[in-house]
Image (cartoon, rainbow, N blue to C red; front, top):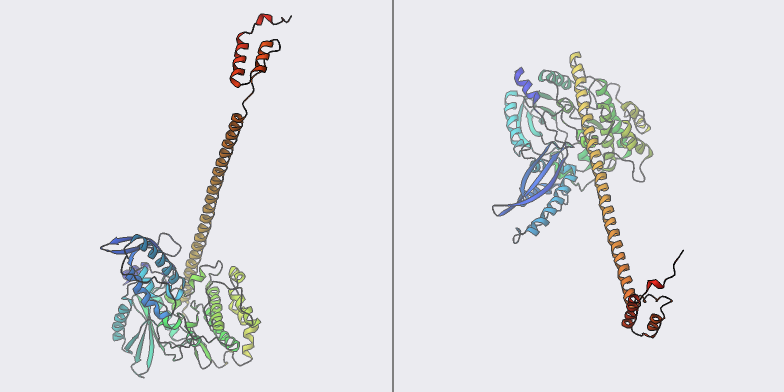
Length: 540
């Protein structure tokens, strides 16, 4: 078993939140149809590149699967006649490039299985859900405590997390089971993970959701919880139900119900109390977002705290990679809390990785909290601590309304001493990978800027060469114009003949008498021929 575990540990696990970039390189005609060659890159590392060929009908099938999101996507129309002409293929290639760029611009679409399978079919087969159903059928048969009733497909954003409706054998109550594969940050061995799961199953806190059962398997783990009929905070924000498809719920919701300042102060304070409790016990949440928080009896309860131990990536990891100093587990929780509070306030997720401008009419205390967590200056310096946020006026007012932790509440979470060391090592591994990826993103940005500068310098050199060429052409043309004008003036006014010597009266008289140029030249020649140098005076 130890040998098998080591091989399983060494297996490379893909980060499903890594950004995919796609470029249509060319088009080729194969068997009387056109295939477009797509060059795809995962993340900032250029070594993670591959090509995949797709036909237009593959793009059309992808478009159909994404229509549940209710997002307008500019797919080019179908054409039956003349669709093999080179000019039309070139135009369609440009249109399909614009289409895939628009798809990848929306995070809710870029993280979905149809898009990932379209661009990376080797790592994202469409049979993932069937494999999960088969795994859970076998596992629950051996468990004996829960009976599998139905699958709840695609209700969450994670591709490798699947939900099932199960029935508890003794009480005959319906529960929600989630099956999750291990992520790239998973470092614990199976024994330590089982020990940690036992501690989490016995956790007691008014703002942390109760866990009914947790079991580890070879490639992942499943967790059983009671069903929150009202759904998560995100379901409340967009007026939807928890068991609907993720793209249909959150792609482009028609209903938006932002929380009031009192509700945000109330629930935000409780979320911070739960986060402080976890960090005091040596554990982080790492995955705070509105979909991981439920509301029960005016209490906010955190869910999915097992994600941290299973090493799965954070929903906001693409935004975290843009930051420089937000790498510690506490800083990540604070940043994700700020994004959660932003979505609760405006009923829409924050698209950029920081926010410095807020709409008019926002509460000054709320704006202060959001700036502490999400401003560009705060992101550069790592943000506040959980303790500092708890003492902020926006949350201290909540205690006046009886929203503090109940004095009779039982708080319990205990890990063995040996496991605490493993948890610290787990946190260090997560932080190190995050810092490494942040550095890669900065290097990629720097390379792009250098390339832009080089391209601009080359363009400037080309412009200078063009300018020199224009100057040389202008100078040559102006010199030619001068030559032509000089020759024209010479032809219009010929040079007069050289006057004869003063002693040659015959030549002078001939020139004076001559009226035509021929006579003048003849007189000059005769004067030259008849010149007698003996008549010149000697110079002593």
